[in-house]
Image (cartoon, rainbow, N blue to C red; front, side):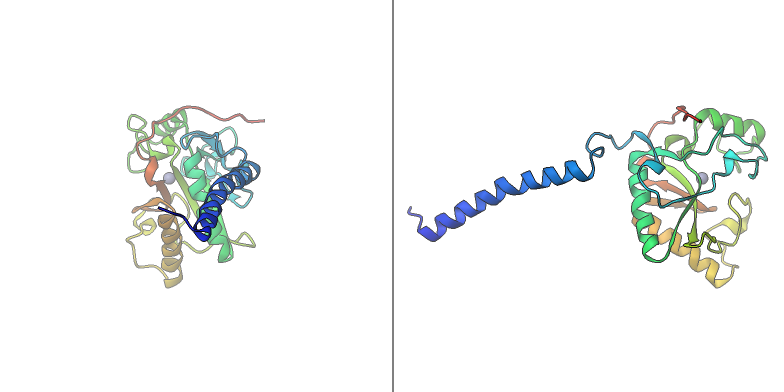
Length: 221
Ligand SMILES: [Zn+2]
């Protein structure tokens, strides 16, 4: 079999592309995301180290919650790396429409879950620490949406409102409230999360359900 000049040229071109492209790609990746290649999906990281585009209102680091108790020494949003990646991707989509995610709660150490259970030992309101919740696994977030000026979109109830009105299935709400909840849910589901029927604010990363519960805590200054 003979190869004519034109085929030879194409053959050389093909190889020079194969040799050249991965080199350029590797250099770009190493430059733009130096940490990403070293971090396992399940490593716990702090959301603020990966994005400055979130608004925080960490209720359990205050007494402004249904427990009426401050159970975190300070407000930090730790999550598994894969949860952070999915959440950042979702937030980018919300930002295209002029709003962003406000965070109420993230990873919750098992010791804190036990503390909450001691205050309210009712599985309707607090997950039994014997079973643990997805919050204890670093795969759950409690969130809402705010406009650019920080004003929260109307969601019908406050965070941690324990009543039927907080359910995705409750439809006796103003049309904009239902639309806001639907919008939040649609973008979160598109980015790998599951909603939780009785709490409009709670989202679980689908791939985080089987991760181990953890008891590591974070440092406070
Ligand atoms: Zn939650």
